[in-house]
Length: 233
Image (tube, rainbow, N blue to C red; front, top):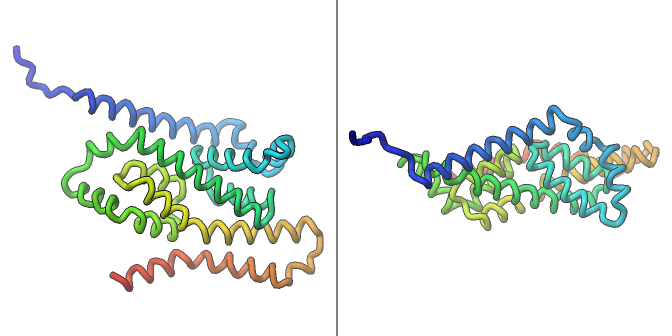
């Protein structure tokens, strides 16, 4: 009897296996943060004590922890605030930015390695055009989504499923998170300095007002970007 039921090819099987690994990775990552003591490690006190023991290597360790936290689906805002609280406004920005770029790159690589083949097999003719458009305009697409504060980790993994070139993704991410990261670290770092110093008179200083102003302005960045985009269309 002739077997007329189409059987999946080896490439299709491989794509299915890889995407199942991706789903398993995401499930384990979320489970670790939500249901295990791992989440307590990312509290300011616990992380601060861990970095104190790291001594000279504390900045490097923090950047690695930040990258790991991104891959474990911790909110980027939380990790950024932690960096500013632990290292201050300026060094906090540097360490947070490097950690964020590292985490974004690793998450993209995981998505691309484990999920792209399966995603490509599901793309029909209509979606194929969008996929190819993202490949052609990858930098602009990623930059726009970063500027409107599209969920950071979701975008990291999601872009790995598309045809966007890594160079475009990396550049769009680097530029897109630059302003927002600086504003948040400057704001949290300034408030931390005032709190630690105990000089509440500093709350009415130029630096304090400037940091609050920048933070408030950052909340309107998505609307400003969307408005500019609409006017150009």
